[in-house]
Image (cartoon, rainbow, N blue to C red; front, top):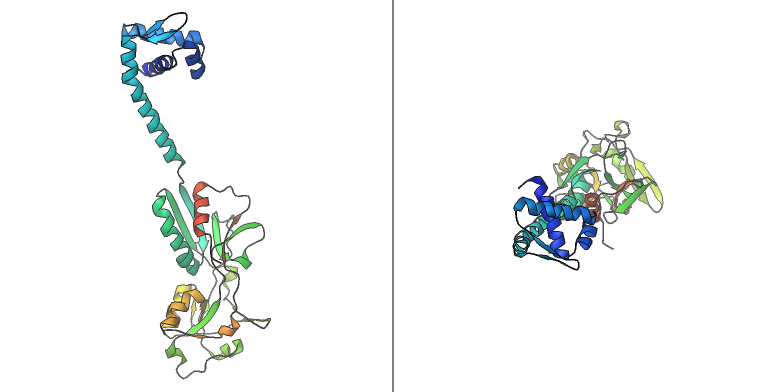
Length: 299
């Protein structure tokens, strides 16, 4: 079939369906005379009259009826396939880049992705572990996850976790022969595992405490420094010192008796994790789905 034949056949089908050159021309967005000429040219090429024309009506001839019934469904099938392709094109797709700490990545992002990604195979997610408050615009990251109190006011913030608490923990072996600290000041006599932040000039993270409205930031000391919360946990489990980690990170090991918690009364709840992104961002369908999957819906 020549390329022009497809357009001519569509013109014929419109006339045969509408039983009118006037209505078919309006539907196709062309003049009645142009449409009449197209059908006439088609009839000349196939060598048979396809339409009976009178001043009052237009009806298919026997040959025209046969052609209408045979090719009409085929064009309908093609229209249906094109509609399916359009739906596929409009399905959420693309790569989303997120920045988060290790705990947020493993306990918040992973569970959300487990329910989202199998349903949308064209969505890809890159997770960048970072403990600082990343400038997501400058770093070309789509969104970050941090405690709500750290999120800038000009950002859209979506809660993705309940309130959090920190915990100071050590192994039973570590506390053998050592007194357990009763106040944050007692930490000066303990071997503490430090976390070096990759941002803020690479400084060591200060342990933050509060009790009865009294706030304390303690610069602890110890033999080991890590830049990973996972290594802090491993060091504590191996009895190498005290670690300061998110409660949810260590609770399973406390329940198993592998870690002992101290200074719990100095670690009140604080704002939970929030997903943040620029207010001027126009969310893509894929990004909107991810935000909805991460959204915290608890009490």
